Length: 88
Ligand SMILES: [Zn+2]
Image (cartoon, rainbow, N blue to C red; front, side):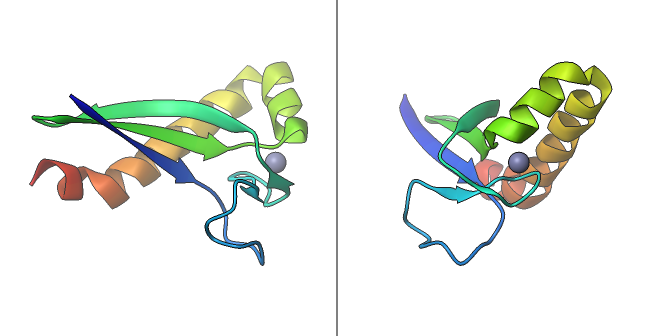
């Protein structure tokens, strides 16, 4: 089984290949990643991670509903953008 890691982030002026990217929630530069979901096809596991800054992480820790909605939005984004690519 192969594993492919896909990182989600907001577009910023930062270099595309760098390990610091815009937080997926607020665009602040961050290297912190949070696992969102895994999608499998026949021979590959696609692991999806979001760049989330410390500030947003703290906010989500305090507000479960906000956190829940964020994860939901991430998943919708991932399925919209990648599901067909992965499965067909
Ligand atoms: Zn943030």
